[in-house]
Structures are given as C-alpha cells and as structure tokens.
Length: 276
Image 1 (cartoon, one colour):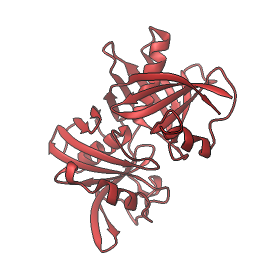
Image 2 (image 1 turned 180 degrees about the vertical axis):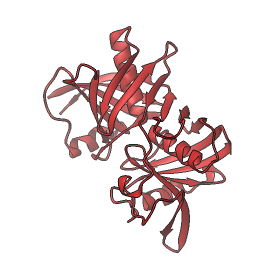
Image 3 (image 1 turned 90 degrees about the vertical axis):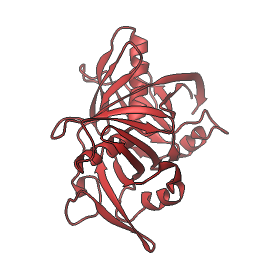
C-alpha cells in the first residue's frame, strides 16, 4: 500500500505527517515504524503523526502519535504544531481549529507569520495519574540510580515527564542518565527525561531524552513540563522562553485549571510516498 507523507520539523524535531482523513487502512506496524523512522531505510522521523477524520464537526481531525522505535504515545507538542500548520496551509484561510489527540482535545492557531500556538491541556501532578510510583504528591522526588540520588520534578503533559535541574545543559549526562531514568522502576510507562537550566524567571535551556526515541533536537511536551514544574517551584513567570538544541519555543501557563500553551515554528521539509 502506497501512503503519502509530508516531512516537517518543529524546532528541529523531525515529524512525519501522514494524512489519512480520506483513506482507509491501519497505521504502520512497529516493525514498519522502526524501518521508516531510520533515515537509512526510510524517510526518517522522531515522531509519525497519523491523521484521521473526525465524526465530530467541531473537531478538524484526530491523530495518533508513533515514535521511531515503533511505540505509540499519547502526545507530541512539536508534532501537533506540524499538523496544525499542514491543515492551515491546506485550507488557505482557516487559522484556528480543534484537534483530537489520544490525550484529549487540542486547540490550535496559526499566525500570519507561521508561528503555531497549541493548547497542551492541563498539567497533571498527581503521581498515580502520571503515572509515577510515590506515596504522595510532592514538588520534587528523590530517584535512586545505582549509588546516586537525583532530585527530580515529575508531571504529565498527556505523557510522563521527569525534569532534572542542572547547572549546564551542555555538560549534562543526557545520553548516559536519560535511558536509565526513562526505564526507572518508578515510571510504569517509562518517561521523557528533561535536563533544564533556569537562567532567570523568563528564560530556560533544555535538553530532552525522549521516551522511545533518545535525545531529540526539541520536545514540545518536554518544554511544557519543564516550565510548569519550574512554575510549581516558584522559579518561573507565567511565560517562559525555552531554548532547545533545535531552536526556541515559548511556554505559557496561568496555573490552576488553565491549559498550557506552546508556541513555536512548524517548517516543511519534503513530501514523498512510503510503501506499507
């Protein structure tokens, strides 16, 4: 089966948008995803966004999210920005709409300058809803890895995140400690691991070791997680510029039951056909 795709990126996070709103057929199998996600054997991607039609007239489309290791996950902030840009470009005039993710509805708007803002829902700090193994909710938790202990913040942005604060993200042991914490026994569904350095109340550096992918140039939900946990500690203002290896995004949250907003770019790279 030949399936068309559009390759895009959000802040350097490589995204494959596969529009199946007018077609039938299942998404790729885990083996196919691993082959397609490797740029030596396929188009290459960090996440594949499988876009489907919605029966609800208030929902522009629904989508599923697949990692390059073949796993399906709940949300991808950079990926949903790419879908929003794709749909806005297709329509030529509709710049605001609602999408349905596995984690719930997402409002999206595309500015004339191409920047895309998406509502990522409310952060979830309760351990059993992240999920994270803990007796009670706390602003920080101590995680044991071998003989070492690490203080970390934990939150769900539709997917589980663990945030460590470091003095220098360039020197952080992302590729050594990231996989150990991703698979830590206290994360029943694994976790995305963020290494954050707060410059001041409005600026942060961040690197993310993504669950099922490894370190990526950017992680939208990771940026949201790093900001809301920093706000929860009283360290950050309502809107924060987050600098990632692939570029910069803005995360804003008013707290309480308000959704977290993620704003950044969504850039086209290429189009093609893949054989499923």
